[in-house]
Structures are given as C-alpha cells and as structure tokens.
Amino acid sequence: MIEALIPGVTEDVDVYLNGDFVPLSEAKISVLDRGFIFGDGIYEVVPVYRRKPFRLEQHVARLMRSLDKIALYTSNTAEDWQHLMTLMAERAPWENSLVYLQVTRGVAKRDHPFPNPPVKPTIFLMSAPRLAPKAQEINQGLRTVSMVDMRWLHCDIKSVSLLGNVLSKQYAVDRGVDDVIQFRDGNLSEASSSNVWVVKNGKVLGPQKDNLVLEGIRYGLIEELCRAEGIPFELRAISKAEVVAADELFLSSATKEILPIVELDGEPIANGAVGPIYKQLKQAYNQVLAAL
Ligand code: PDD
Image (cartoon, rainbow, N blue to C red; front, top):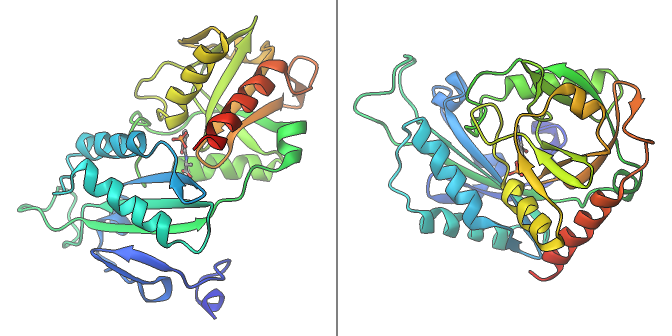
C-alpha cells in the first residue's frame, strides 16, 4: 500500500516528526518548510549495528557544528540529539539500520533571509535497513570515473542541499560505474557521498579537512585504525596525478564502511587488484564493529 504512495518504500514504519512518532505514510510537513523550498537544513546518517548507533557522539558533534555554521539554533543539547537517535535505533524494525536525521529552519512565508523572529525548526528522523557492503564490492572493488567538483564552497556543512552530489552520482550511474572521484583545482576532494583515501608507499593519505570536503566520521576512525595498525597517516592536498599513480584507493562512509576502488576512468589503479593496506584496515574496522 505504502509503495503506491512512495515508490520503493515497502514498510510503513514509524518516523519521528516534531515531537511525535507517527507512521511514515502519515508524517506530513508544510510545503513552505524551508527545507523543501530552499534546502535550508542539515542532516546526519548514523549507522546502527545490533541496535547500537556507531560513533554516535561524533555524529552528533558534527550535526551541531553544521547547525552552528548555518546559524540554525534549536534548544536541543548533544544529549537530546543522542537520545533521539538512540530511540530511533531502538524502535527500528531492523537490528542493523541507518538512522537519518534532518533539521530545517522551519515553516515561514517564502523569503530568503532567516525568518525574524526565528520559527520552530522542523526535526525529522527515520530509520532504514542497513545492508552490509556486498562481498563482491569488498573483494573486487569499485569502478569510478573522475569529474570536476562543481559543488559549492561549503562542502564541510552537511547540508540537505545535495543537488551537486545527486548530479555527480548520476554522472557515475550514466557511465555504468559505481561512483565518481571529484577534483577541485586539480586536487582530490571526495566521491559523491563518501570520502576518498589514497595509499602510496605504505602510507594512507587523505585530503585535509577544510571547506572543500565533508569531514566524514570515518576520518577520525581511519586515523585511529592506522595508528593502531602502525600505518603512517597524513592529511594534505593530493593532486590528480597522485591519485592516478596510487598503490591503492579506497572510499569510506557510514553506509559503505570502507570499500576499495580498483579503476579510475577505465584504467586500473596499480594492478587493478584490491590492495593489502585496504585488507588490513577492513579487518581492523570489522574488529571494532565486532567489539561494539
Ligand atoms: N554520506 N562526503 C560526503 C559528501 C558524504 O555525503 C558523506 C556521507 C561522506 C562520508 O561521511 P561519513 O563517514 O560520516 O558517512 C563524505 C552519507 C552516508 C549520505 O549522504 O547518505
């Protein structure tokens, strides 16, 4: 029934909207919500393993940083956000889920400046089943194409205005590959919804945390895993030439965990096989998850 309303959605699970849990089919917001009209909002995606949100504190800290950067003020404390996300994870019909949270600047007459006085922000959470990355992706790796990063200059903000990311992912789909690797002024930024990592001479390199990339929660995790495994780790500008000549490439996100990239623009990365540093980090990642 719900699929007739929303293609692809088969379960009418409870979602959270502005203080209440209601079935997805009954959750309604105004067409004047600034999230709908302007993309004026922030989101988070938290992976849940056996009902435990993974690195919840870090996700909430990033949420609050993003809200701050767009001056979207709510009365919620970090503990409140953590509580809401934990509730959603516990209520989900799936043990392994993704909690999606979105906050927008609320409902007001369409006008670009912030409503003055401010209106009540819209707060929405939903859960979805979290499917583990496929064995084929882990063992064979992903194929990618390069593209110029055409997004705005505040990619550090986890904004719901994702048109640039949507178009870059569709660019990959249209070319029959898994994802894009984006470059800005000749330097690596990120994939369409993941961070990209380069391995060279045994060292893991990532783009520095600045306004041109979203600091994935896996930034901190990969740094910790590298330290524990004795793998050198460095964040700095990485040229396209360095990406093309990498020994290994991989990407990271809440949904994909870490996945190897074996092809860029039809050419293999190194010998086109999944590399040893990826395998070592994947094993270390799995150990962290198993210990949750
Ligand atoms: N995407 N870069 C971009 C542009 C992203 O959208 C994401 C996450 C990441 C990785 O961040 P993290 O490790 O915190 O998931 C990097 C989420 C999963 C999404 O939009 O669905």
